[in-house]
Image (cartoon, rainbow, N blue to C red; front, side):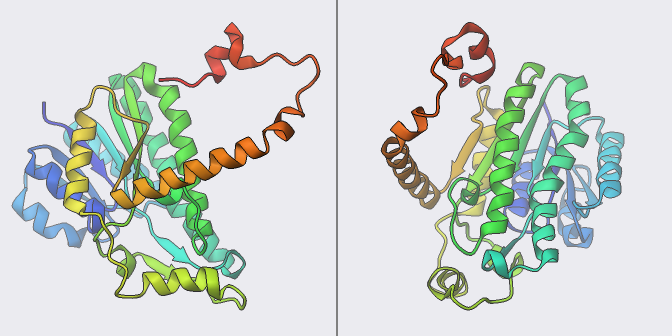
Amino acid sequence: MTKIWFITGSSRGLGRSLTEAVLAAGDKVAATARNPEQLKELTEKYPDQVLPLKLDVTSHEQIVTAIENTIGKFGRIDVLVNNAGFGIIGAAEGYTDEQVLSQLDTNLYAPIAITRAVLPHMRKQRSGRILQISSIGGRVGNPGLTIYQAAKFGLGGFTEALAKEVKPLGIYVTSVEPGGFRTDWLATAVNFAPEVEGYEQTVGARKALFTSEQFIPMGDPDKAAKAMLQLVESSEPPVHLVLGGEAIGMIKQANILRDQEMEKWLSVSLSTNADDAENPLETEAGKAFFAPQK
């Protein structure tokens, strides 16, 4: 059956690759962008499959209008992809207040708002797939990206909790977590905070790496699009899907270090239990709410 996709940030990067792959597969797309003119080539090639929509994801009014127009045109939304986003590199104390808010508005609040607006339609359908395009930066923290990664860690938590909340409704939610991909992201979607003295070896090194010709990402965006098409066809989709060998390596190393740190401080952690405490993970009532779910 033909699927109806709603994809934010369709004009460039991973969003563009995914939109092209979805259309080539025969599905239909509500393709959103701040400047829909950038979608002209796709609308000419796939006039009956693509609905170009203007959307600033930080505008609640535009979110509501875009979703209403999609439902009006196609009748439903089967797959929501929250892809739009951008990064700012800098020391945490160096960001302006406006830069902090812009990172949280676009990378965290917007996907939450769009997801909340689409959920009533999927709930009535008793079906749907939601892909939150997060980042390896939503699993592993690195200097120079504190505010961007605060948003992505938050998006990962929202996704993990929501996946458990809506699964009984036939809705599946996945946090897609790419490493570096060969898109124009660094050139078009990365800004910089004012520099602060003292961070040359951490933030400065990160900025130098990202702005140098030596940094060549491992990921192929067209292969990432193919992986996401495969994802939405799965009857048992993962809550987290990591994309790219670079990201896999970083997460494996981070998991080792986290486990080592937890074991080192385990006695301190357990010392805070009340003397008569009962582990909720081992009670019938507690298992229903706290135990990990498959």
